[in-house]
Image (cartoon, rainbow, N blue to C red; front, side, top):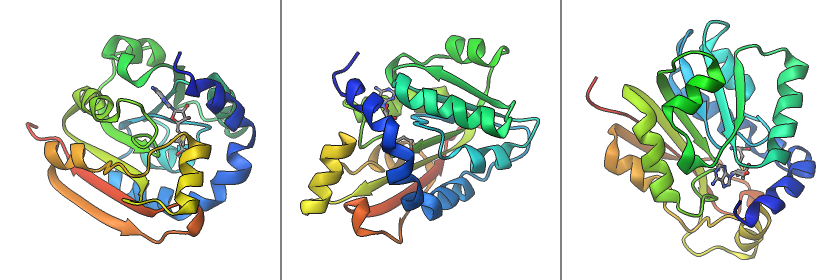
Length: 213
Ligand SMILES: C[S@@+](CC[C@H](N)C(=O)[O-])C[C@H]1O[C@@H](n2cnc3c(N)ncnc32)[C@H](O)[C@@H]1O
């Protein structure tokens, strides 16, 4: 288990109270960019405490599935509580390192073979140690024609606030997190979203589709 996980387990205790209100608009924009359809399956990794679930569930409907994975047991504990409170039977949660996720694991989680229609990577690539490799791995799980969205904060030269975000979130917001998607996707789009000082940098939303459908 990477050393940062102990921190994320602790961070989970105050993650929702400190972070949730800062990303409401960005989460809506990310969901919209995924262009989810009822009945689809979306992989949300890392899912953290499940702050994106409401929008993702609304997108895939009762017949679809939201697969939420994260490495932190503390984050997942909160995510489970959120799912239970809402009674979302289409959300399936699992603990895994991003690099270890595979089709068999997802099928076991879902209780049936899984086709990933959409990939939602929100505040993940700034946090994963081997982030480019992690994204390429996730991309490999996406079906041909599937859609991916990457959202992260970016500052080439972080200010004091940016450095605080890096410290508190165990992140590296200097990374150009959209680049792997840009390299792999068809119809790649990138735009900046309204950002707050607490984001530490500019929120960047990137989206694109996997070719070969
Ligand atoms: C800043 S949080 C973002 C969580 C969520 N996506 C959100 O938007 O609220 C970063 C998350 O990445 C998870 N994480 C870090 N390294 C990971 C890894 N190697 N595999 C899976 N999850 C990881 C952490 O546990 C944490 O929940």
